[in-house]
Length: 146
Length: 267
Image (tube, rainbow over all chains, first blue to last red; front, top):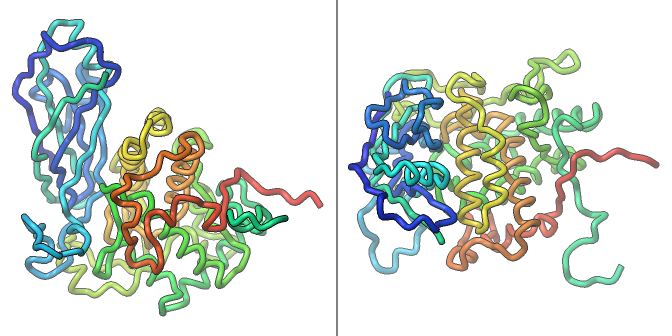
């Protein structure tokens, strides 16, 4: 199984080139199911799990170690939307995660080419057993640092 | 030596050594320690410790949060204590990911036998998991009785440059982010039991893998003195370990160990 998340076209034409580092930050990552890899491409909107890492526009990847499903009874793996006052217990185990990938050089190349960017993130399940689904991230942000 | 309150003198520290540098005697002692904890079915034993990470519920491990590194340092500490209860001088060795040519499970963990007997580091017993909890995972496979691996079938090994990127990270959260994806990648690369959280810690290689991650955190700490986890988590309790908060894990010397490549007696 694999799934893809594609951003809308992001213009970088007016972006300040003075940054020393640029990260793609993925918020709200699911880790309730199988382990998976997220492969990230710039300007390859049709990228799939079969798209090689050697393809132009591949900018990196990251892995998510998964919980492999829910071993509890119904409701056990539901992450509460909010917490009651005085609930001092730790956050739910399956609280969505944040992870980032540094894309400094790739962004500079895109700026040099005068292009906008389409970010395509392909989730590739890393499991020997069939099935297993990965929810897309809540949002993805391109963050630059001076 | 005057007591300066900084912890035990260096002579009391134990070295965690590279797997491939262990002497025959050290390796035999490690195998004996694993055999001993495999045979114990109470809370001194292997199943209890492996089960803390995943099944049986509750799953205590911390991943994808700022507690990832501190929690696993505490976890290794407690399991190493359990091993030392059985064989006093053993320490958890670390897997040097890039020590050989092609990525590979270290020979000490890869051979099925050792000295004519089953190699206790090749696979571990899986026990103590309620059938109902396993069934709810819907793996389509029976609850395993022993661990298995399939190295290299699910993902390529993480490139060494990713470790270097982590070591150059300027802050704790940045280091943790980058080293955790290396960690996750290695779990997936090993495959089989190691590839998902519920039973990963039942594989003996889990402990060598995490010793390497812990060592990399230590190397990063040495290069970034004072770069601690965020203040907001420093007093967070690392469940289920008694008397252990994040701040308790910051000094490996205070926990009684060091990382070394090898230790060779000369006198």
